[in-house]
Image (cartoon, rainbow, N blue to C red):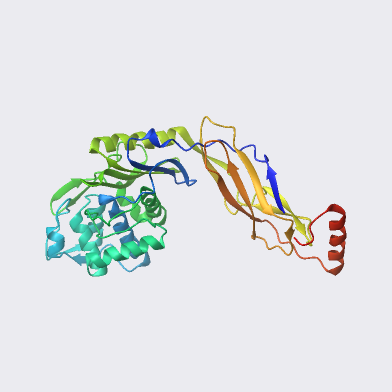
Length: 376
């Protein structure tokens, strides 16, 4: 038997995902990192050539090794002839020299250096090809199912692809898992071998709170950007791809970031461990068990829309004792016109022991009187 408790969370507000035609970008996604709410998306799951935005995966591979202690910032890698002669954007590393991880990372992050990317790939995996295979395998492990990498740079290749959604999730990993290294993405310029180059991210210094991540452009991919900005503890992630010019990329990314901060807010709805509902318990030392979330429930909602959202709690019941505190028992479902339903798991907020023989007899008698299904 399924029990549903409805309309008990009047404080929940209306959130609307923006229409896909609110951006000129062929592919886009805007995510509130605080709540995981998608504020805007347009063809966000289609695997596309990411150009230099794929260097975020290259950087992740290095960050993970720094965190594990396998590499250090002052460790050096040799510059091969292949890396030195690589075309496109460059850090201008010199063949047959050694360059520190710190300089190579800034060469990739700030200057988008293809040569620095290859030096890192060869230093870690022995060859760029082997590194690309490792990138793809690691992407799969992280749940980035669209990621298929054939090089460390984003150089055009028909099988070098990733979706806008997965780029946004990759950006979130870089921000949340490597805060000490992520700061490099906010650096405005980097000078190497006497050549100073500015960061290509158009939001840095232009949009309050913008602090990363990576641009991309090839003739095949068009102009793209994976970006992030934080204001008052609230962080947004934006990915755009397929735009026709760097100017359009700059204008559209600024507009959407500002729109996300202006039109939406993160509203705390429930605290971790707060009782949402109670579920009937069969053959238990308690008649009912509290249903609680295991984390704070926060939603990103349109500021001006504060009605129309319905909440319900669903579980199969009555719940049969014994019940362990923390046991998954129910689902909190939030739904409203114009949004996809959002679900949060609910757990037992207390231990409930199974009653003894005479208690079970009493419960069976009560079931006969009140109609509980004794087989539940």
